[in-house]
Amino acid sequence: MQNNDPLKPGYNFDAHLVAGLTPIIEGDELDFVIDRPNGMKGFIINITSQGEGTIFHDNEAFDVKSGDLLLFPPSATHFYHRKKDNASWFHRWVYFRPRAFWNNWLCWHEQHNGVYLTKGLDSSTISQIERLFIDIEYISKSDIPYRDDLAINLLEQLLIRCKSIQPDVVSKPLDPRVIEAMNYMTQNLNQNFTLEDIAHFTCLSASRLGHLFRDEVGMTITQWRDDQRISRAKQLLVTTNYSVNHIGRLIGYTDPLYFSRVFKRKAGVSPKLYREQIS
Ligand code: FCB
Image 1 (cartoon, rainbow, N blue to C red):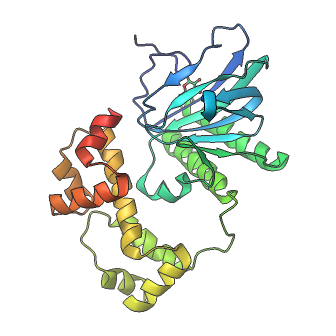
Image 2 (cartoon, rainbow, N blue to C red):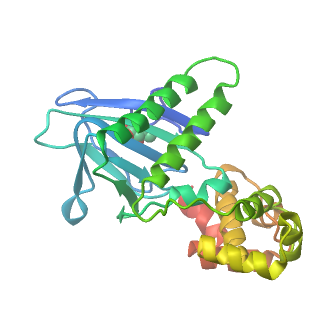
Image 3 (cartoon, protein in one colour):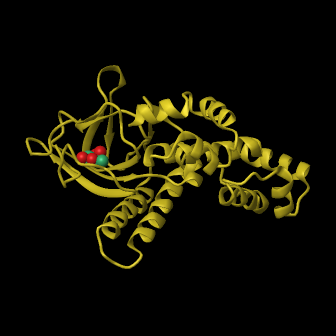
C-alpha cells in the first residue's frame, strides 16, 4: 500500500529530508504502534513536544516525555506508540539521509537497543531545539528559493546542538589545524591523499599533525578518514544502485578487497550484505 501521508503506514520515504509532527491522541486515527522491525534507510531524529510515548516493549521498553530526544540510526528497529496511561503523545521528527561528515554528530552518549536517547534537558535548551524542528518542517514544506539548502542547514544546526549537549562532549574547541585537516579529508575523500599531503595543507609536519590529531580527536587520522569513507559508502550503498566496486572507487579505495575488509571491520558485515539487510 502506497500513500502520500508520512504519518500513515505505507509512505515511501524516498527523499533526503522529510519532517513532520505526529499528534497522537487516544482513540484517534493516528493512535497505533509505529512498527518498523528493520528500521528505515535514513536516520530519524525525534523530540516529544507533548504527552508521553513508549519506545519498544517488554524488557527493552522505556518512556519519553516532553523535551526528550531520540535518534534512530538506519536499520535500528522502530517500535513506538502513545504511552498507555497518557491521553496523548505529540512528537516532532525529521527523517534524513546524512552527509558523510555528519558522522561524529550522529553518535550520542546513551543508547538503548540501537536507539540514542537524550533526556533531562533544561527548558531553554528544549525550546531552542524544538524551534529548529519547527523551522525545518516549515522550510522543507515551503516553496521558497533554496528551500532544500536552508532545511539541510537548519538540520545541521539541530544535529550539532544535540551533539554539543551530550554529557561526554568537552567544550574545548578543536585546534583549527585539526579542523583544516578534517575539511581537507572530507573534501578529498575520493582521492588517494597521504598524511604528508594533509600535513602540507595545514602547514605542520606529518608527525606533529599526527600527534595533534590523535590528542584532540582521540583517534588516528587514518581511522578518522576510514570512518568518513565507510559512512559515505553506507550512504551510497542504500541510496544508489552503484556496484560495490564502483562505490569503493568513489570513496578512494582503488583495491576492492581492501575496501571490503575495511568496511567489514567498521560495519560488522560486508558491503553487499549491508545493502541487502537495509533494502
Ligand atoms: C511517522 C511517525 C513518526 C516517524 C515518521 C518517519 O509515521 O509518526 O514518528 O516515524 O513516520
